[in-house]
Image (cartoon, rainbow, N blue to C red; front, side, top):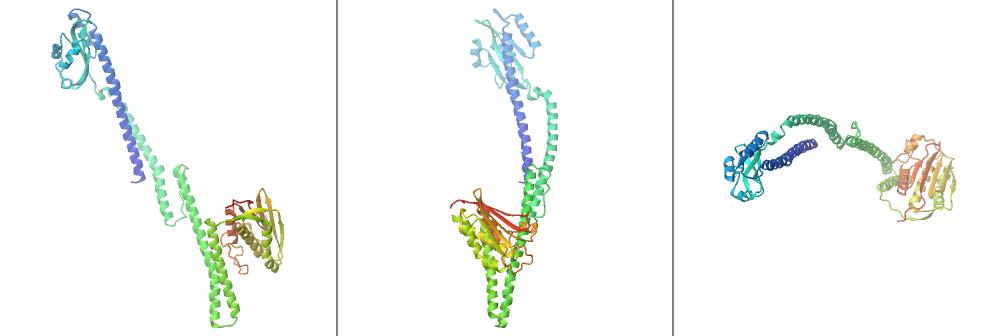
Length: 458
């Protein structure tokens, strides 16, 4: 069942419940108010009518007064000297019974009043009445039966029927307008959402839903737009990723294929060719290892063995690894480190951060320049900054840390690398509850990292 049909059934059900409630209310009013009022009135009038008699015989004067009351009131009155005569004067059956049955005589002869209710064919209606003995308290002179044929439900509320019809017509007009408005504001956006979802499921992420108002449907539409935009961005990134990895893998494979063909033709420069092939294989292995490492970090599968670390010593040790490459390019390290800084972190992961940052600086700093490393403690946090001269624009700096992104557009093979080093650093810093930031307000290339000095021991 469609959503629109469910809403329609809900509206129809609401109308049905409203009409049922109105009927129950009218029935309650008729039964518990109108009938109760008539019963009380009949009983009261019967007692007042019988009270005209004080003592002695039932005189013509008293009977005339009672009949006069029958003329001026809405009630019917029957007066008789005995119960048999009362049955003759009111010969109609009430619910297939005589007015006074044998079972009623003892109570009436004892001076007790009795209410009689039921359907009378002669009147074609329900009748409510009461038989009242005419007595002075010691003897009974006669009986009076005062009754009234009841009005039906339609007669009781007859004057209200036009008003109810008018209100009903107005109600249905308003309901029709309301349903039309609901169809416009609810069903049409839902149909658009359904069509939009099908297109997204088919891979069309460029479409967007129109958000006219921020109600529940509008919020859903906005969320779907954000989802589609994110999927489109993800698809673009995936295409870019596949293009990058194809470029990265194709280059060493091309070299390997070319050198292999050359080796088949001649043994000349065999050692050089084999060394080059080995280098390219190592490059592919390094690329795949970095990809696996980055994916594990992004999926949160990394494990940390946090132990006390002398951060300055670890930094000096890592810098020493790059002493020869730095010397070859006439680079100078300027280090300012807090010797007292002790951290509770994973030694291997922290050194990996130091290594990738320094490697990036050594590769891309201009020859003969200075690489500045600053390590200090601030507010129970380790703060590390790596700064080197650079000609990168602010736009290029913003992309540093993306997969495979390297500022050298032609991917100069002399620099090497996979373009994943800083991406791995960003993920490691995130997993270690730290913050990775590239300063865009300076001409130099400066990376600032801060992370808690004491991580949670696992």
